[in-house]
Length: 316
Ligand SMILES: Cc1cc2nc3c(=O)[nH]c(=O)nc-3n(C[C@H](O)[C@H](O)[C@H](O)COP(=O)(O)OP(=O)(O)OC[C@H]3O[C@@H](n4cnc5c(N)ncnc54)[C@H](O)[C@@H]3O)c2cc1C
Image (cartoon, rainbow, N blue to C red; front, side):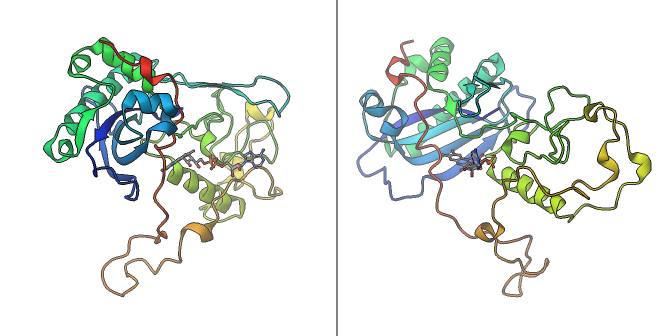
């Protein structure tokens, strides 16, 4: 799974695109019309997009500027599923990755609708006064579902949120690689602790969820935050352990050597010690959780690799 993203690129008026400003300043989360998924869409206003990074000099020529204002349109709850498979038994050979973006008609419909919304946003007076024109799209193309579908297929790419390739699931699920404690089924003392265990894709950028998974499992492996010890009566036989008792009657990791894969964000790099709940550092107001040190603005979005030749995008 991943979040597929297409985008509008706006050719800015002189002085309206400043690469020194933060890249992503406004994020819109919303539910696509007719969708049964809450907040299944995300749009961002990117102040400056390096067009060559999207598709080289060919893209710069097609868009008509090296630096554009970007309106990425991302699908946060895609129905389409990609596929990761092994190309070889040799672990040094890269696996095969099929993204399969917008293959499901409902995914395509929501992305096309998102392009319509981005077009409207681009023409709002506060944005339009900074914009010479929308690149690659025309009024004619906007009135043709077929042309917009071609535009989406030609421009859709990754939001860099791949996940779910070793997903978590119950013991009866033949596709579940790990159990609810991130332990690899049918293997001893081996865990997978990263984005690949996500059973479904979060409806937001996934880095915080990855950090949470790492923190949670590292706590379990050190015997913290486990709650009451389950009663032995809750133990059950598991087909995945060859009929042996599944160790659900123990805390995960209890009595086992700490081994396996744990990709954990170092605590010291992200969080400062939090004051007691209910009090802020100044003693006034209300503190709701640990403070996170400010990090430099992300460049996500300005380095999306080209998926296809952008010059072939459109003719209605
Ligand atoms: C350009 C870009 C921008 C992004 N922007 C955002 C954003 O703004 N917000 C957001 O929420 N998410 C963002 N993401 C997504 C987020 O960074 C990832 O989803 C998240 O880091 C995934 O965490 P992970 O632990 O699964 O994998 P990773 O963070 O990729 O960790 C994998 C680790 O394994 C190590 N490793 C790999 N192979 C081996 C090996 N053979 N042996 C030992 N170690 C190995 C790697 O060095 C790495 O440290 C972005 C991603 C990219 C690429």
